[in-house]
Amino acid sequence: MKMSIQQLFRPDVMAMQAYHVADASGYIKLDAMENPYTLPDALRAELGRTLADVALNRYPDPHGGGLKPALKAAFAIPAAADVILGNGSDEIITLITQALARPDAVVLAAEPSFVMYKLNAQFSRMRYVGVPLQADFSLDLPAMLAAIAEHQPAVVFVSYPNNPTGPRFARADVEAILDAAPGLVVVDEAYQAFADDSFMALAGSHERLIVMRTLSKLGLAGLRLGYAAAAPQLIAQLDKVRPPYNINVLTQAAAAFALRHLAVFSAQAAELRAERAGLAATLGAMPQLTVFPSEANFLTVRVPDAPALFAALKQAGILVKNLHGYHALLDNCLRLTVGSPDENRALVAAITTYFA
Ligand code: PMP
Image (cartoon, rainbow, N blue to C red):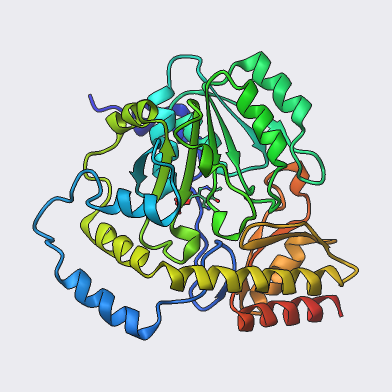
């Protein structure tokens, strides 16, 4: 007797919706915090030659080839820290929750924040505790500390800056969480290239801190390379649940190549920061919009009717993220990825037309 699909799969998985990625073909794509720029021509040719030499017949180096020392040098990762690589930082979130998932272990995060914290808690059958942010998207520190004291989380995830809201939390608030947390604290610095602060200098010396980053927002989302830095005794445990060949040979080679040309990507990030400031000023001058401060490569805005503006932008060929419905604090909010100057002009023009 065969088992039915319902008998086979976990009820909570049966009840889930798959992570939805909108079909963006033909749109100006401002929905997923990607860098709008492709590689300059000279670099493309050089990358092509580099990848042609990769041994596709061999399994990848399980430790990332020379990538870890290259990352340490490029991103000022302290000597005291070890590094783990993930197939995107998404995978590192999964490794952390898998490794911590004792019965009744708790994952705690502010809400709204990156959805994968909660989803991975569920995948690993951990208990998830979400603590609402304040209306201005700052941390509610007393509520966070009370929840930490009550639930004794195995891990607290802090998105710094926070997706999908934009602001970076006050450093002192995150430090207070680090002091209070009984377990691990993951400071997720996915948007670090656009931010004014980092906890990386503490990685390795603070015994419960994991600083997680990604190359995705820097212009390499397609590579799928995330990394985390922490004390060696933490990385050693995470490494045990990591699939041995999780970083493929093309990613290893292309990431090493990108790090040798980091200046190109850093210049693009600087340009996007400047674009962000211009876009924030222009949109902020529109009386119908509230623009939240952002240290990421997106701006979260509140409008009178987010679903209607989302639809109008889509009609105009621009895809953004409609946050309405995700969380009460995101009522009538849209998340606008900062694009190229042309893309941002098109966005402003479409919003202006909509409100005219
Ligand atoms: N953390 C945060 C806060 C994010 O917003 C994202 C991507 N949206 C990620 C992690 C995952 O990024 P990746 O898997 O591309 O490294």
